[in-house]
Length: 171
Image (cartoon, rainbow, N blue to C red; front, side):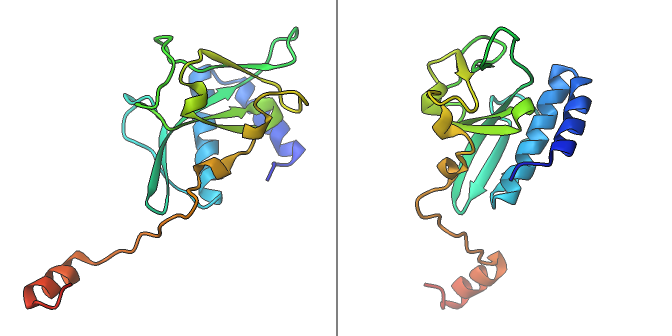
């Protein structure tokens, strides 16, 4: 579901004017739009003290997602370098996040990494389109956030449930 080249060019020109914090916020918004379009419920936690940025839900399954973005690569490199640590230079762990999702602005490419892949690394080098890239299977791998058989949440109105219990007709 890539965006048109004209729109991508316009967004890149705008993003180029932003500092890293604002570009990261733009990537978070882009993630939330994309995840919602793919059928996930998306929630943005209040504050920014946790190491994850958003929570996504499908059925009864909830995931803590950290979103990172990459703006450019060095001219001497054919890959994009993704830092998989926070400001404290400590890698993210399964205690803190479930997925690290990366948006590479110039490629309009999403990578969905399970935490097990990143929790013991400080950097990942991504080569979009590279034939021997060890991470090509994670490009647009949104299916990793889909449980094998999602359970559908069925809402039971609290008042109706309480009335049924009070009358003795509840199971």
